[in-house]
Length: 132
Image (tube, rainbow, N blue to C red; front, side):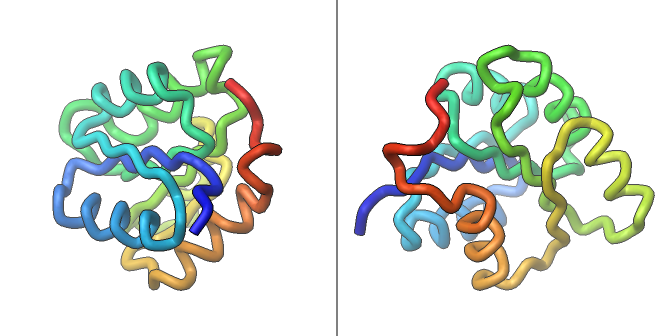
């Protein structure tokens, strides 16, 4: 299986993070993990992933703060940031998009739907994915 892109999964829930990371790895993605918002920002700056999958409810920095921080970095400004949250209200979606998230998925997200969403967002061979 060819690695198609690098995805950074930022979620404070180790079980959820592990499940999502495992699914993405089995789908051929290279996966990085961060257990907090501040760690996620640091890992994103270091690795310049092709996509960030971001939990919205975290204790140190919430997903909105993390999305804004990622968007403020020139090298990450165009990186797709996908909000993955248990919040289902239209206002939550609006706030996530206003903070810089490019997409919004709700938990629980069926594995096939998550893979399809990420494949669709990136949808390019590895050689064509935006360089950092």
